[in-house]
Image (cartoon, rainbow, N blue to C red):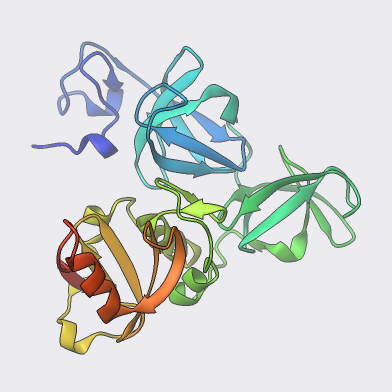
Length: 277
């Protein structure tokens, strides 16, 4: 059996105990769950602050830590299964179970239940918080501060239109490996929009290209996904796409035909397929 290293908590020297008999390693251990304590924490390919960012943890998400060394924790993000290294300073001991998620595209928490107090964040759509007190229109979240409660949604209450969610990111900067509203990439946009609707979604485009069912280019509908090698876009209608892309360096809207022609002129080539999810 071939295990995808992006989603397998294993190295030749160490692996999660649950992988005994599946992945060869010199030693096995049980991960220790921790919680992302920064508004957004980089998940890197190597234990180095300059290493490639392959994913992000949003505030309140769990990270299963198997090793801590030289200021970095190596582990796995259960929300999408990605494995990598997170700075120890961006993690905290396991927090209380979340009661709410951030439902605004981005919002601040405040040191006190007042918009005039020190602002903390910003926190992005999908961040997870445990509300522990309320005062007026504010809700206090463990480990951060006071949110305007209208910007939170109870766990289990989801959006219903992932395309509309994705459109709220319009203009956000392009950021490789990003999932936050201040910067995200093409697959991060798809993932965040689907998660907001309570739909599990893998991290990378080749993994997302296995979701749903294939459709022909002649019968595309709003919400279908168009894939290129290493890229994905969301159909707003049969002729228009929304995508986070390195051409515009932002989440942008453009005609599908123009995008196909522009990308075909690069090494990426023609679309590899269309999926309906």
